[in-house]
Image (cartoon, rainbow, N blue to C red):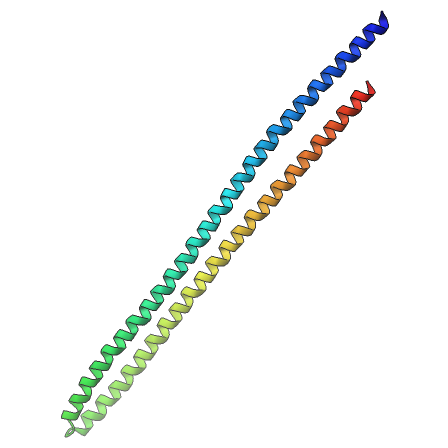
Length: 180
């Protein structure tokens, strides 16, 4: 009779341990589902960062187009200056009798050409600055993408650690089942 009671108690303990094992396994499945949701969230974040990178690239292209527009405007200004210079040459042909005024006008033209050359250099420097800013923005977006990849790798590491802990719990439960 005592042997049957002992067998009954052992069977009850075995069933309780089995129920605990099933509860641990269900918790493991819930945690795995949460980790999958977190991984989806990180993937969506990476996609958002890639979209932001595309936006920055488009902004850089827009800035380059704006630089080209400035160059074209400079060419139009140069054409206008050419017409003005032609008009001045016609006036100079009419004023050949006044040689000193002719030399003074030539000096003014040289100064004006220097001013235009300095302005062109300023525009080129500004376009270089815009290109450098675009490169900096692209580098920053690459940094953000690398950070997202690092976060995904860290979540994978956490998943693996959680699986190892669950496996250790399972081995302990099996050992306890075998012991009792």
